[in-house]
Image 1 (tube, rainbow, N blue to C red):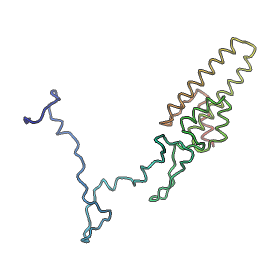
Image 2 (cartoon, rainbow, N blue to C red; image 1 turned 30 degrees about the vertical axis):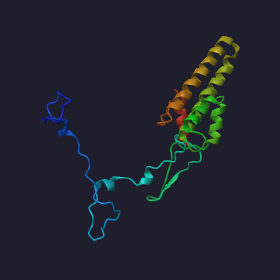
Image 3 (cartoon, helix red, strand yellow; image 1 turned 90 degrees about the horizontal axis):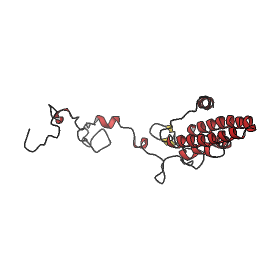
Image 4 (cartoon, helix red, strand yellow; image 1 turned 60 degrees about the vertical axis):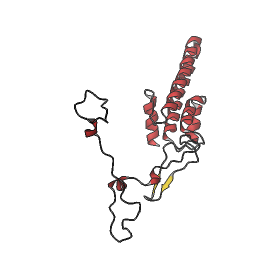
Length: 197
């Protein structure tokens, strides 16, 4: 060990410098053409061939917020001729996480039905709209059945409020990863309805 280097890992038998991956070498050319001015082919780095085009990394994010504005639209990738689909895009001018929460907060099951009618682009929002509509329609029928008992009706109302809070929290939190929190039976049914659309 040299006098300039300090070893902060005293229990390692080999230096971490020996096992470290090396950085790629410098780029050979700044020119985009494979042939230089002298007519000789230039050596291109293998990294250049592996990188996607710059349009692959561009996002239509406005104002520092996540995607989800209704006006975003799919972008065209000129180099590949494909239409890129933004998974966080919605039909309504709202963020995806807020819109998914609205399925549970807007007087369920009416909020879910509203989103099923007006949201056409986001499968994540449509899943939560289907799940909200199915769960709270079943709970509405249960309210009608248990209407004779004031105590059971109030207990079911407290369960409704807790379920609205729980499901809207999951819809908001899981919007970043597009994970779906499925309620037993109704979540699977909502997924099947969404897949058949």
